[in-house]
Length: 326
Image (cartoon, rainbow, N blue to C red; front, side, top):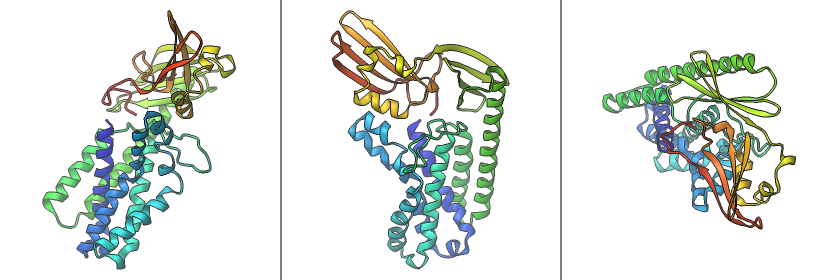
């Protein structure tokens, strides 16, 4: 799914370049079009350059991914860094502001799409480190991918000015995202009628949009379930544990790099302590990504009887193509 997400962003870079042909300065000058194409393609992926943090381990990746590279000032840094050299390289220096503009649009579109899915972004850094997520789209949306891919193929094989076609594609894109946003808000309203106005409700859409999995947070519990065709199906209730009530075993794991990175990102925290013959296993899970009676995003720490940390793991315990698609 991560590969498909990368492919989607690159595809949107291609279609943004097609959209730029609405500007006569782009459509009439091949060198400008080529520069815009390269800048939009690179700009559409640039925020995810922070994936290089995987080289430092999963904890570093979780802590930094979709952080500074997706922050409020990031587009205004990425755009000239990408656009100006590309304009010069393609011999379009006299139109460099156009190239920079489309690089800026590509970066903003990438961050905006990430904001609309359930994983979210720290888009208000450096002013706030809060994670923002609108819970509207999957990491990979098959409908958006299909319409953009079809338009890109038509442009590739037919050639010629394609601005009006891509204007229609982006018009449909805006309407689709608006409809999904409305569906998301309508779903939350129905769940609030079921569980009350108090407490936070988070959603994760299914891949093809036919259902939503939800977590309704009350004062003392997390209630998980699924909503399909207006019908609410409750599946589990997990009791909350206040940080002040964590056991000494759970507290002994909070200094590990994996747990610190997990707590930096997680929103609905559930901790489970499993006592073993030779020690303990502590699992920190994010209930927000609960699916099919499992919580696949977690930090797991093993300790001996003296509460010395023996090992810790952080990450997703699922295949990339398996739900939840975040």
